[in-house]
Length: 138
Image (tube, rainbow, N blue to C red; front, top):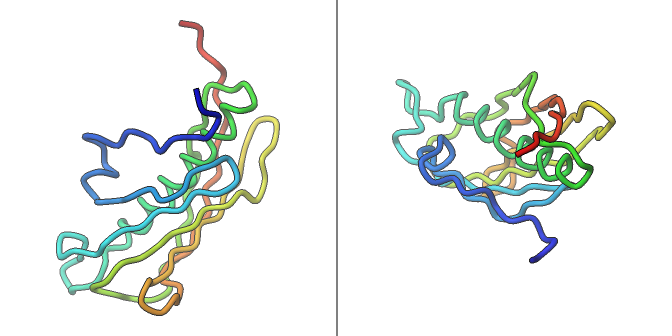
């Protein structure tokens, strides 16, 4: 069995429906990519802010869960998600990178930067605070 964290099975989940692809996953960094499609748009033809919130939440949660698992916790659940929308786009792809700011005894704080692949410019940035959950007995 490998010690390398494996991307989560997103079959049938929100991440699959959105089209989020995990490129790298670990307790200290998670990278994901999304190809922008018309179903990601709000009525004015630009990416809906909720899409960015979803990316931020998903990547931070996956990284926090990986770290929590390595430290004997049952996982981590999100408490807050604060996402800022920096630049409107309507096509192309974006890559998001999540890194921890704090990984403590009971909580973690992760930051996520979402950039446009065509030129590397930021389109959104967010922070997610997560609470550890205790290991459950089977």
